[in-house]
Image: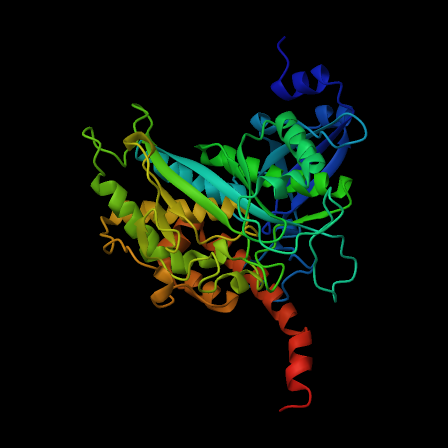
Length: 446
């Protein structure tokens, strides 16, 4: 009798422990570590449904009337395509990402992975398959055990920290070669397909580009890469942080999403016609992003810190204008062949949950195509000279999401209710904190 792919993987790799994981609302890996023999014996793992209502501070929303969670367990079913070794583990360990279901077999709609699958199913019903290529920026910083102190760049091989911005500097990347050797090795072991590594504008700020592919696979890879970068950095006595704006005088970190759509049968890019010109669907996709991105912004900028990144002239868009090869615009169309025609959504922060950000970006484009929307004219100058179109705070972004019926219908009422409850709780917790700036400037002056 042929063994299941997971059983075969565990046997072939001599695995003794299994990390059974799910991504929560914040993109944090939750789950259980189980002996491999026990994992193979059980018919799916179980976790409390409320795991999706836990905030990034470890609390739960006080008002859950809109969600009405039951004190029940949900069933975790492994996605066999996601099983990988855990290359930094001390003993042979595997990780596998799970989907979540109730005992009657219906999916848990609060699950971020399910939200992305709902959107992909809508594309599939049209005979389409989205193609995604994420770019993830992050900072390397010195270990910081006292959160009252600001973050600082780490010491590189030269024995000195970076004191200025080193965009695209090879030497600045080489300062951390031992760390990146581990990152590449860990990624290869997990089949995380890295395209390029560059030094970004900030001090010790890096960017990893992943090779394009199916959206769910790339969301999984981005999810795993965040764990990988953090683990590799800890080995070298550093932190890798994906905060959107970790340092006040440095640019923020983004998660840019390059997206296109192919016909499932022909595998041709539906954004390009036979003669190589852009199709109406391409422009409608852009128009959908323009129309719905502001309402979806809380999924691209999910934390109070996220909105510190969205400032003019600081490598982050402030509106949803689009342009050809224009990095000041929220939506950029890179120079490409007809087969590679795509739009780059530059609005998301690195702190976004990859499943939810991809779901939101593809949902906006899908609505544009279904509604036959028309985009504005492309801009050729700086979009920073044009007014803000994106929400400036998490509270505003959440209000726009709940008021947007097309997006609520695509993501499900229950997910939106759960997501806003979690994020409103985090926002209220943030408002209880008095910052150093307030004490410095208001204590004796107002």
